[in-house]
Image (cartoon, rainbow, N blue to C red; front, side, top):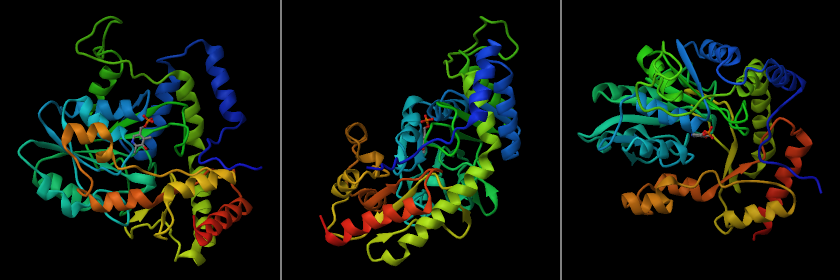
Length: 373
Ligand SMILES: *Cc1c(COP(=O)(O)O)cnc(C)c1O
């Protein structure tokens, strides 16, 4: 039986050659490849600084630390995200204050932000989910009005735009991830971008055990971490970055194929929508299962039996047990996020899929939906 993975990195000879070259050079950390990758990345976004780190999660931790957010403070963020965004707020001892999401983009609903602001609110941690930007104009206006910092979790949305401006260029800092299921990969890895020199220097120091910037090897001036990105990863990233335009064009084409093949089945599934102000960078292709009688989790099991991997993207963070216990979150508090979360289904989405694969996946999905479970 042919099987269809949910995600798969696109790796070729070029990547192999680049990694092998680093291996043979003997410089495996803090070398020229990291600088090259950071320089390329900053240029891509048109920002001053980029600081490579060991993961997107590590990047979020450093971005919050560099913003000076700490114990007793509040950060407004979304419950509809990968758990790492909210966890990073916990790492610095602050409280994630969730608000509900927009039903089209699944990102923070700006109309609900203002009433969540308290005297303790210090920042808005915006997540651009699934490859699509949050409504940055109203969010930036609110941040300005209440003097809040904005940090962007752009881990899923490299090159997505809002009103023509790239995600990752709105806030004080932004974080991208290069986990293997993301649009480009470094194996494990991430990057923090900013135009703020102080934020950049703090991130550089914190990722490297708190070392001073012009320092001797063992001069540590603050509590730091080991969040460095290896030369092997950076070399991989530099090659992947060079292929990004091609990758994104192919992802867009794949999304269009799914749109086309799913179009006749609007009574069964809602295809992903893109807000007018946005261009999408297609991290995943997530449907909403409309048919009330179909239990989404059983649908996932039925698809696995015919070789198709899908995932419930995403479980709502406020309903994870340790969030419920720690912060007294309950079902019913964020109805849009909960409804989207209960019906969402991510389909196989990677660059090896051809139109015949899309046709097969849609046929199987529709057959199960029409027959019922
Ligand atoms: C992938 C991801 C992260 C974490 O990135 P890692 O590199 O896996 O640590 C954070 N936030 C979002 C929204 C993500 O999709």
